Length: 363
Ligand SMILES: [Zn+2]
Ligand SMILES: [Zn+2]
Image 1 (cartoon, rainbow, N blue to C red):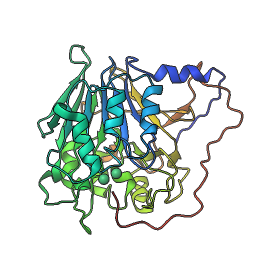
Image 2 (image 1 turned 180 degrees about the horizontal axis):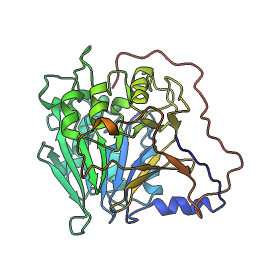
Image 3 (image 1 turned 180 degrees about the vertical axis):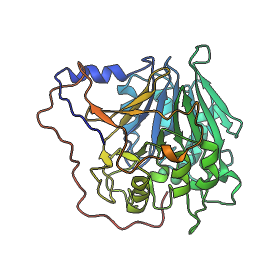
Image 4 (image 1 turned 45 degrees about the vertical axis):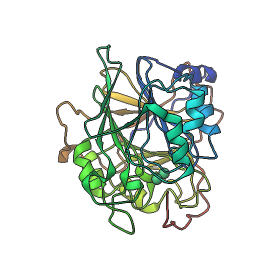
């Protein structure tokens, strides 16, 4: 791992302002919403897509974050599935940031208050996603962003588990690829079914993986990682969660495939391994037009830089490009003129006291 730490003086507030609305780059913000999921994509020319919107009872988190980065409206809403840690704040968020376009979901129905509130909040904007759904952002520009729905409702695998019905989206911009697939499972166990194995070839090689199901032990199987080969994974996880997330099983698989992970919070499971994992808070991935690299900015201000896969010539993994565990091609730096002097470098996350037992029932 190549890792360089440069400390430079600057004004930190300028950094927050710099991220706001359109800045000519694709931005994906993985928001710290506690134990739940919410990601906001801002296209280079300012279109805003929300992937899930946070957990019921903690809607202050997505609301504050979206306001902080200067979002004023949402163009497209995509609900991965109907658990209330994913659609728990639709009403609150869309009241503050009105929805201009469609609200895609898996169709069907669900029997919770959050679901009912969601349906009311999206109203006539509601649209059922299909595997033909392609959302094109910045359509009139020469560098559009596309979001393709590649699977949903179990991808043909019989299941009634709500997590396994998650909508799977692939974001493409130039050479860059990211996948967001809600709480998808990768193992046939209990009420879960292995959906990931059949979905992986539809996704292909990606750069950034939003780790399915908050790093449940039943997510992120080896076939998934071997086919999609993400360099980094973002784990959306909350302190004090009752599920034991992040799980040691899932992290062991991610590490074995050389995936560096960023956690929105420390969670209540295994402690981070400093060689692979970082408790990062809200995490922003940015990629410039035609860039062969992307940046990952964590809440503390550090910036990691990674190369994109050359997806234009190698849409599927080849053995020579399989990442080596611990080797991320990462370079850490602090952006000049945007970061404050850091009194003491703090690269070591505080370990959790002890891993909590993994809970069986998860949402
Ligand atoms: Zn969830
Ligand atoms: Zn779920």
